[in-house]
Amino acid sequence: MTTANRAEEEAGEKAVPSRSWPVLLVVVCAQMLIWLDTSVLNVAVTTLADPVDGLGATPAELEWVASAYTLVFAGTLFAGGALADRFGPRNTLVAGLALFGAASGAGAFATSPAWLIVARAVMGAGSALLMPATLSVIVQSTPEEKRTRAIAIWSSSSGLGVAVGPVVGGSLLSHFWWGSVFLVNVPIVALCMAGVVAVVPELKGPRRRVLDLPGLALSVLGLGGVVFGVIELGNGQIWYGPYVLLPLLLGCALLAAFVAGQRRSPAPSLDLRLFRQPGFTAGSVVLLIAFMALAGHLFYAAFYLQGPRGLSPADAGTVMIAAAVGIVLGSQASPALSRLLSARWTVAAGVLATAATYVGYLWFDGRTPVLTVAALLWVQGFGMGLVGTPVTAVMMSGVPPHLAGAGSAVNSVTRQVGGTLGVAMTGSILSGVYRERMADAELPDGARGLTPEVVEQARTSAEAARSLAGSLRLPELAATADRAFLDAMYAATFWTAVLAVVGFAVGVVGLRTRNVDRPSSGGGRGSGGADGTGNGPVGLRDRGEPGDRAGHGPPLRGGGGPGHGDVPR
Image 1 (cartoon, helix red, strand yellow):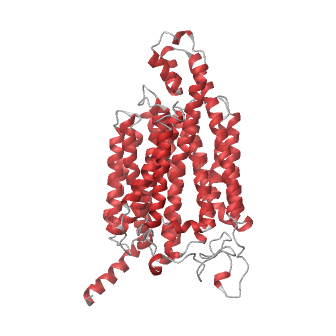
Image 2: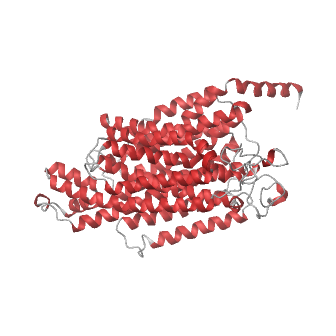
Image 3: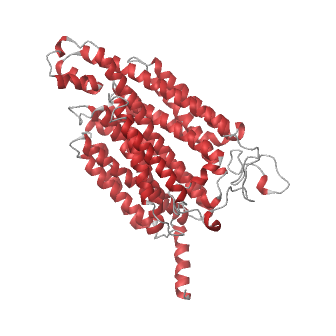
């Protein structure tokens, strides 16, 4: 390298920190799009199910509208990290924004549920490009002394997106057509792209990674098969039929092939050595279960608020802000509570609190006070806020530094997969129990002259039944649909609570870590928890577990080089 080139490079490196905060603002706005879109959908599902004001989507189609996004997002997140490393995070960020914006515009003008499902899937791919690129930009463009604070601000964008989404969605649905909740993304994307071009510098990853296309295809197709089977089971198909058993078996086989392939791959998307750490495995299971329960609960809570409870989309969105506020406050309280109780019991308390709120829905009906609903949502959000930070700290405490990126990617994917499975599970229970109750219900006289197709719609979807009741002036039909929906919600919330209790048990048993709060004679390595959770610095492990001299677990393939699945740091 010539002296001139070296001087130019050093000048460029010095120029980056001077504009690190404008860069942070741009990438946080881009990151917030991911969570904004997810939370907006929570208040739009009822409108999408309406055959007059929406698309007349069936419960199964609504599950796919919600699941297609998270399914593709989770399945391609590893690819997003690899592409950010290969082509640079700035270029990947622009590509992700462009893809997300184009898919949002296409989804806004969808004429069928199938079109919207495809658009949501493409939006998930755009989000998978966004998330690792935004973090990589922050790490590379922020001075070391400001990096921790910058990452904390980046992380808080999820809470802001969750809080703003329901309000924005409810307001748009109260004044415009349903497509506005997706079209609103387009101008936000345009502003973010302009900001990226103006202030985000050209950055390069520390190394080039090979893209594991076969592994990515197997993971997406396998998880898609499992979700399809679960959704079709709730849609009235018999469990041993070709629409349920076959996709379930095929999906499980593809996932097994994915795991087997990752063990032999020279460039795995998922480094399975991470799961040799007990805390990492237990933490992953807790996150999977917690987000399954949360996503499933929010799915039927939106239907309850705008259905039997009779709130408008705007009012329902306002009520659901309570959960977002709880998440923010719980996240802020979790470090101090972890120091007081330990990370293990903080996570356990958070999961148990959410389980209690799910049980509370067993007593809800059409006259439950809104303040009661908001209070339970707040407790639920606070409990989830207590879970995220300490369980992540426990997971990462046993991961060696060179696999920290891969561990972080697994942490993100676990949340998305949990959300997908949770919506599929509770949606299937809702659909199955509602159909069963409506099949046994006696329809009012005014509905007996309708065509079989219209009657079948009313027996399949509570939203279709209410729309039909409004057009025919049959309040008895709406009341029948509400009773059937409440029975379905009770069944869904019961199993959601059971799932959360299982998560509590896994957290108590699996998140036990060695007490490292006592100073050791060796100085810094054995001293108190560096992460503020009492779990100690990276590399400390439970007694009796084999590992290398640094406590980082089994030796690496290929003589201890960098982990194949690392995300750019």
